[in-house]
Length: 160
Image (tube, rainbow, N blue to C red; front, side, top):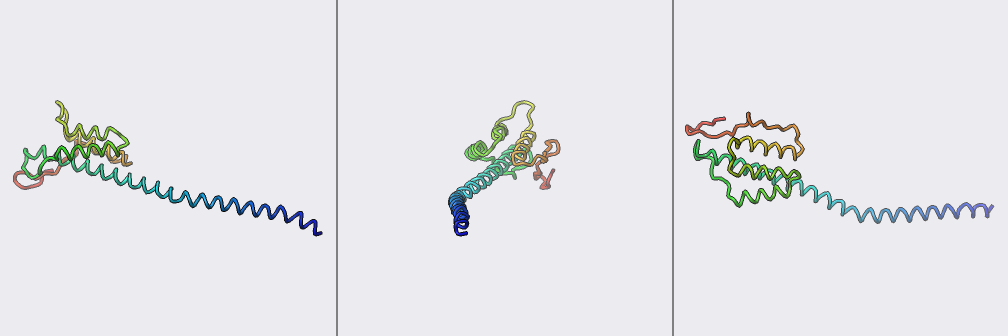
């Protein structure tokens, strides 16, 4: 009977020891990879935040530029056009953070003198639609025929 127990316990002890070794090895590597995984998640979150900020700056600057172009027609209440330094800074951020490289190209096109027949509001809405698509909002379609900037008229009222 002792021989039977001895033959039975030796494989069982070996199995338990092997399981414990595998458990500790797995735990060791899991604990080492957790900070790396957290760091990668944080890096992606920061990139997305920076991307949204770059797009927000691009929208603000594009609208400021378009409003400044129309400022002389209606009144001088829109303020100054953005500086070349501001435009270049935003354009470079758009090149860095955009997956679609047509976004910074469209931003640049918006800031350059338009060719005959081109409409600045159409170019602005194209830019806005590209950003919406990049951010995952496929349903946001800004129609340039319906898009109107709100501006103060010379009489002081808002004209849509």
